Amino acid sequence: MENLLLVLIIAVAIFVGIASKKFYSKPYIVNFGIAILMALIVVQTFLMTPIGMLGYMAIVICSIAFVFQLVIGIKSLKIAE
Image (cartoon, rainbow, N blue to C red; front, side, top):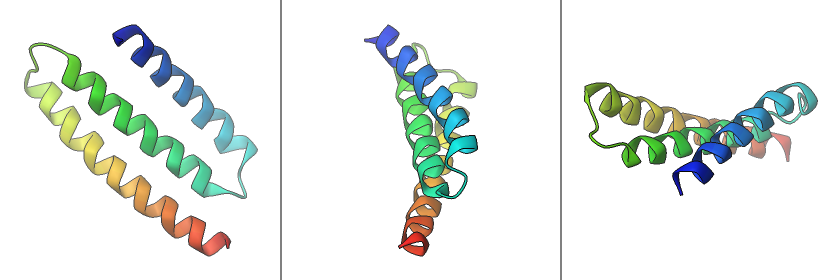
């Protein structure tokens, strides 16, 4: 499970990098990709044992970034329609 999660994180990070160049006119794709990446990082951090102070900070910061990217992606999607 952990190895699959790490592979997913790497795959989504590569997708976000490529999408940022390829889908420049569709920023909501990049925003949703970053949101998924943040969610996967939060899940990966929860699987770490024990979770230290740095882990809790990563969970909080990535959770906030997930919400922001989701909101920005929804706004970009509404503008594109």
